[in-house]
Image (cartoon, rainbow, N blue to C red; front, top):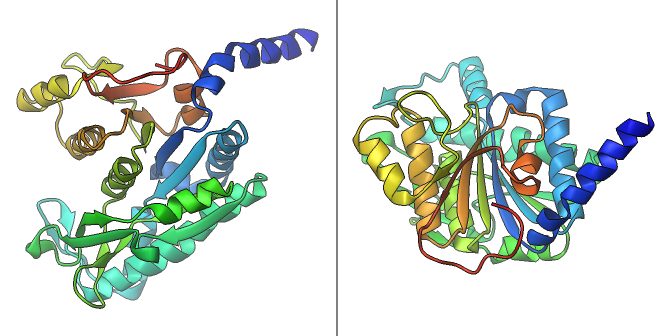
Length: 293
């Protein structure tokens, strides 16, 4: 037992430079995937977010909710059509999307954070015009692309010690428009507008892989572009790395694609030497405090 406690103390001591490194930092976390439907995984994620807040990090959580949306659409008998792998979102569908994301999913995450001892407030991209969108593709209907960001509401919340939890539903440029926004896209746009220190994209894969299937832990924007061009990065990983690249271009210090199924993935990425996924950062020099990768 003494050995166990000694190991815990040593781990905390070794984490000190990284805790100092991220004091006051803004970290945007995109949460989704299988963990959202598992009570134990949700509770673990919430504890990790509360711990981040406790040691001085300013986390902003952005979530998805595709499986829950699919389930409700099925119950309501609303058929989904698809164009190039993306759901066509008509008026009836976007109403269900808003109900599930801003209601059921958002408040479940808020409650989990509060149960873990934190303070959290759930909002959507429509609140205080946080995200204003235009149609991403006319064929897809009410699927939005952020064109205007107003993130002061997030600064006000985390400045007061409250963890913002954001549902990716947004206001349109025209009156009474509501848009569904891809969760990764929303997280990247928010991180860019906040000039966050980190964007963490939690996924159901281990990270970006090379042609031999090995995880690439460090990537520059040029390397990512080359891997897309030669076909190494394909399928669903392309929009994730494109989101990461866009966020870094907007001023995010680094974006990380990491496996959300890994226990304490966010803590491993922030507070250990080697991190937990594929980190994409600009090659342009920036002032970098000690600790962290």
